[in-house]
Every structure is written in structure tokens, then in C-alpha cells.
Length: 165
Image (tube, rainbow, N blue to C red; front, side, top):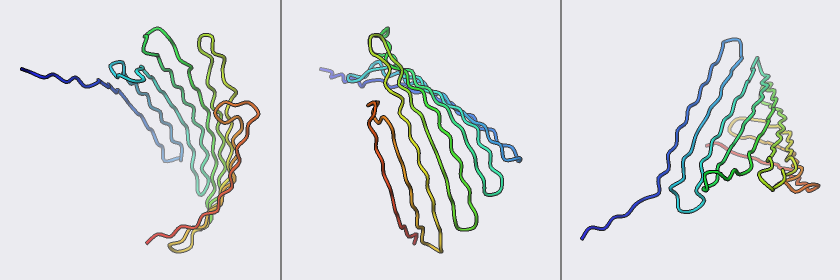
């Protein structure tokens, strides 16, 4: 008697590319395809892509990134909602102090008879001070329309002290 046990098959193909120049410009991107159609639960084929550009000079760093996700449901013809995002950030470091600001917008598109969700918007400003092995950091963050709920808002303020030994 022979017992056979078949495992769900997950196939992942991914590639990334990064090009950096001595002028401080860096460009990169990546793409992955996930074939999870043999999975017993939540089977889907997913395709994700992202691209970014970053510039750094002295203590200043500025960046921009876009990403896209397309998921095909198990029925192989039923499309699920695509997700797109745009992310920007800027940071400045002078001595032991760093100040940064970032924002992102995430849009879940409509699919079939399902309408698009309201765009999720995230904003955050942070500051950190390093002295020896100690870092003191603060952040103020806000998310509008979290989980795609129109008019909802989430705010968070953080004060952290960390030590490296």
C-alpha cells in the first residue's frame, strides 16, 4: 500500500533591478508573479510591480515610488480589485538629528460589481536625535480613510527612546 500526500504548489518568479550613480541618483524596480492556484485556501495568481527613484546629496534624501498589484481569483476568470500606490518621502540629517516626512496614497480599484474603495492617505513626520548609544525619536502620523472607510481617520503620536548595547 502506498500513501500519497500532495502539497499545494506555490510558484514564485521575481526579479529586481537597481541602478545607482555617483551623483546620488538611484533608480530601481521589481516584479513578481505568484502562482498559488493549487493552494486549498485563498488560491489566486498575483502579479506585483514596483518602481522608485531616489536622490541623495549630503544630508538630504528625496524619494518617490509607485506600486501595482493585480490578483486573479481561483476561477481564473474572476478578477479581484487591483491595488495601486504612490509613496513620497524626504529626509534631512544634520549631525545627530534627522527630520523626515513621508506620505502615501493607496487606491483599491473596483472589480466587477464591487465599487472602488476610497483612497487611503497616510502622512507622517518624524524626528530623531542620536547621542552615543541612545536614540530619542518622535513621530506624528495620520491615516485618512483607513481600510477604505470614507471619512474615518486614525492618528498616532509616538515618543520612543532606544538603547544599543
